[in-house]
Image (cartoon, rainbow, N blue to C red; front, side, top):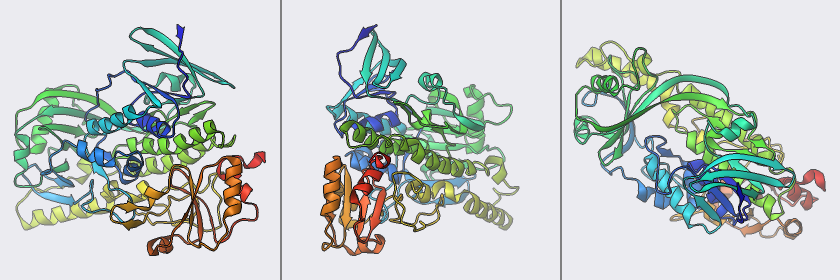
Amino acid sequence: MKPSDNNFQVVIAGAGPCGMAVAIELGLRGIRTLVCEPRSVDAYGIAKVNLVNARSMEHFRRWGIADRHRANDPVPADVARDLVFSTRANGKILFKAEGAYEWRERMPIAAETPEWAPFEAIEKSLRTRLLELDAVTFIEHSSVLDFTQDAGGVQVTYEKDDGQVTVGANYFIIANGPHSPQRRKINLRLEGRTLFHNTSWYFHAPELKTLFEKTHLCSMTFFLNDDAFGDILVPYGGDHWGYYVSPIPEGVDANDWNQVREMMFRSVGQRFETSGERGWIWGSHARMARSFNYGRAFLIGDAAHLTPPFGGFGMNMGVGDAADLGWKIAATLEGWGGPRLLDTYSLERRDVCKFIIDGSAHNNTVWGKALVREHMEEDSARGEQVRAEIRKVIVEEKTQQFRSLGAQLGYRYTGSPIIIADGTEPPPMTYGDYVPSSVPGCRAPHVWLGADDSLYDHLGWGFCLLQQDPDIDVAPLVEAAAKAGLPLKVWNLDHPGVRALYERKLTLIRPDQHVAWRGDTLPDDPGHVIDIVRGAAQYR
């Protein structure tokens, strides 16, 4: 085992989307970061996550890759970014959610719209950005073997082609998935339940798209008929498709492509040629670790939590982890983050993740055969009545699965010790509906200031004091921030959209775009406010 001469501040195990997200967050802040990844630098995953939701796209915008990610999407424009429930590929449309995965126009409530693109495109967008950062070192064909920690830092041992290397760093981030040996070493179990198991198959089928000429070729089609099992078809571009069955029906060997293919043909309603098939079995899990912190080690993404897939939040929750953890590690390394700041990572993210996991688990309660009705494929008044009944059930029971702006944008950190409450109750937090609020802990309400000019584009990488009354003397707060070393931008802004959503003359916004404090006057002790929001209040 040979020691390394490299001087890193953070080591990350795993370069999936969540590991790359936190590496980018750190790298853009100048934190020297080492990323160990078993795959080659140009190897990307397939047929997993497809949706980068609106909140994650806002982070992509901060990282300079939102437009790049859209350009990386290989799915042709003739595939509508809609969601459809259909009896067959050439059958009856039961329900259509237009723009379920990509809004047709920009949203007033967010700086970005969701982007539906294959997993390969997501990883390519993140990987390309990561490799551009001077502060980040990416080592392909490498796997973390072990780590130790003490009061002075961490020692991480990884294996690569030419042997084992041990490097020292300040912190270690475990981002190598639910089976991480490092998570198992620290005995932070993913507690909860597995709802059921599913199968996914990826294949090439050039003629399949022609089967949708009488219906609707879209991002995701759910099949409901007497032969269907909650089957899903997803086009990936280049005439490649994903086929998902959730849950796996009894008596079906999900590893046997011949069985799975016949099931797909019955459900779709027609046979077609396929090639290059790859398949796997995976679980719908509702699980989470009791803590995401373990001394100088941190869990992120699937290493910390697993959410059921219907809702599209698995990777997006990990991007949220990265945005929360990244600025806190950087603040601590830069010296202005207080001794308590890193402890708030678990405190803030666990409640949010539980809220999303519970909502996503609900999306699995009505599924597959439960939505199938007799006569649903008939060309008759009776058949239309049955389809109307199914449509009603879908709207009532399934809509939140693809109308989830509350879970995307409405989560908040109102109980956090680095958030200063003002006694105002925020709007109720619901999975489906989002109501903008500037109550401390909430995501700062978004406002378009002009064409493609987002409020978020001006907040900067540190804290931002949004000031709507230029007559207020904010010098004491600025001086307190400077004394603590906390980066603070003061932004005087008079805008009708901002006045409508920001209810106080002063709003202090964190680096991750959540409100930390607000008021109509400066507090009597500005230094105490600064100490609270940087995690140092009890050490004054």
